[in-house]
Image (cartoon, rainbow over all chains, first blue to last red; front, top):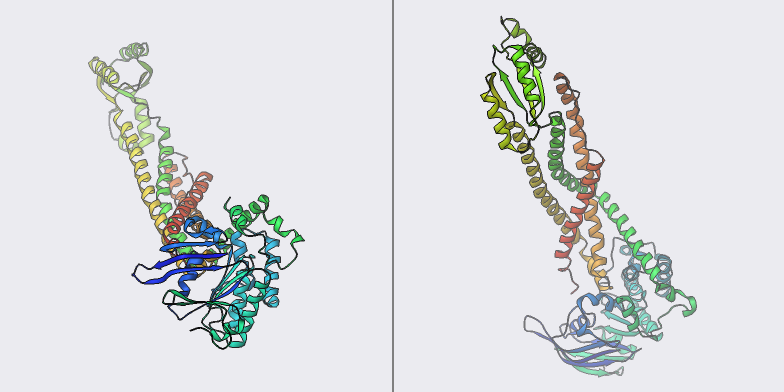
Length: 228
Length: 338
């Protein structure tokens, strides 16, 4: 589903953010991406979400070569992705419902379809009673769940999350991870960047570890000896 | 086309469905009619939202609209003034006339034969004889200086023949007719009042060009005002733009609300400009009809009618749209997720 082939990313400053990264995430997999801050996690996600382009190498997502993606095609590519942010990027000038409806609005969904899908997504994250609230009135965990609902409302094939539990306590983090597992269980390919090693170890999933822009570990860690 | 392309890329097995596929919703979504409908819906929704935003900050919006209105009212007022001026001078048909002032001692019979000779001249379309008495009466009426003339013993005014030439465009030929008339024994002086007709046309032309130049300059000003206002809008909605871009919003989608906002500013500015113009005309029409009635005319000022209403609002809306387009072209590109 996701293939990185010898990907290099060098910023204009001359700093190598990613060095010869090759990896493969099969369809329906759930993978964690970990490493210290500055190891290249964010860069990898930025390449995957077509925010940036690789300096060298190619990236294939769902059979599409991102190098060949024209700028005007990027919006359509992103509609296949669900993106969850650490700071959830919710808009506080509108209701929870309208926040979640945003990806459907940009894709041009009919009104009744929007209503059905948004409620289905809200139901999935357990916030059906909060659709009329302003997200600013919700707790941190609830806000993140709204962010996840927005990421999945368009039924994306791939779910990408950047530090989705960054600001949450362990119990809430666990709930969020369970949500991701649920989506993965119905076939969504999930890639989660996180530095919460404790949590990752408990999930018993494949882990990719980056260090100084290089992939130094790729496997399923045991509980006792997790990487880094 | 791109929609179907991206859909095709989505693998069939990506079953994140939260309800059975048989719901039919997926099929319904791909319909072109449905997509068109939702596009229209979005336009309607964005238009409503722009109006709501416009009135959400009434003071700031009114200021911007007023700046636009003043900038547009100036050239429009000049244009309207010119139109009124042209209407006022339309009574003077602008045809060149030749006035032949006759010798004071000319005999009536000689004048009549001279007039008859001129009437038979194919180069002259019309001959009007104004006797000294007629001229005096007309002068008294038109100038209001009748009292002054009572003190005079004799009528100081000469008899006049007013000629209307057949061909008014050929100024050489007119000049030749004037020369011939001057040589006639009865004529004292001959005046071809062509110069001031030309002057009037040239003045009107000057006014037209002035108002066109002013309009062009101020239209540019309106665009710049809208560019700046929309730039501030874009800045204040930075977060939203980033999120929309990340969830797959196209540039057109991101741009749309700002275009509608620009349209809003322009249209309201145009409406205000029309109101300003109407106010000015109402304010001036009293004194002007008083003035013209004192000259024995029933001339009244023409207000900015439907054409000005449509032209100002439509033109201003277009300028607003252009301003918004420029602002979004320039500033939306700078806002990319990072």
